[in-house]
Amino acid sequence: MSGPEGGLPSLMVQKDRNAARTGSRWFFAPPEAWGEGEVLLSPEESRHLARVLRLPLGAEVVVADGAGRAARARVAGLGRAGVRLRVEGEFPAQSESPLDLTLAVGQAKGEALDRVVELATEMGARELVAFSSRNSEPLDAERQVRRLRRWERLAREALKLCRRTRLPRLAMSDFDSLLTRPEEVRILFYEGEKGGLTPAASPSRPAGVLLIIGPEGGFAPEEVSLAREAGCLVAGLGPRRLRVETAAAAALGLAQFLWGDLR
Image (cartoon, rainbow, N blue to C red):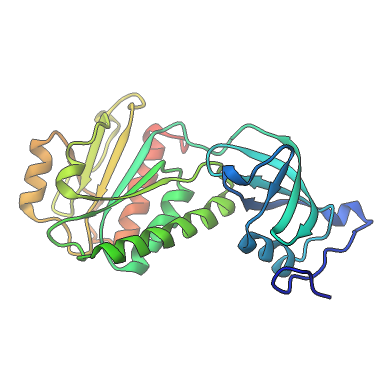
């Protein structure tokens, strides 16, 4: 039996409350979808809830707005605009890192950067910047917009998977602009550097950390020199050459271990 919106199945009342308890299921709804005690899911989220997961009326879920708000809710109905959730109680965010962490990655192949978006979200980064440099993949304005839209969707999916309450900010930049950012600690990871990252880089939690990972072709020596002149630390990630997404994961893990919530 189909519902009124895009063939969605009807949500049947589930008398067995234990079977209806699905608090592990997280959904995303932006702040504007939250009303007085209710949240309206988007058509995409509604289809996932009703068609893929087949959750019944009364099922318990969690909904997050990507701006720090999360709440327990129950499926209250299915209207033409989508699934309606009844909010039962908000709770404080417990999965956000105390470290203000930004990851900057040189423009690379789409598949590699897609994975970086997911990793950065899962690892607690607050911002992800894709930058252009000498060896990065060139992108025109139209492709940049398409990539940002795709990354927004991937970040939302990763947020639900890792149970964060805040979406990372997503942005594009050029290499020179990165060197003027205000983070207290700025680290460029370069395969030609022998020394790694140590706690001596900042013994206490910095006011902000910027991690800079090169594109698939790496950094030009001139770019590394510019970064040093701008006050960036230059560090290596071991003796092996790493893929972009592997280097990003290693750098994020190091930063969260030294100053974040992986201690």
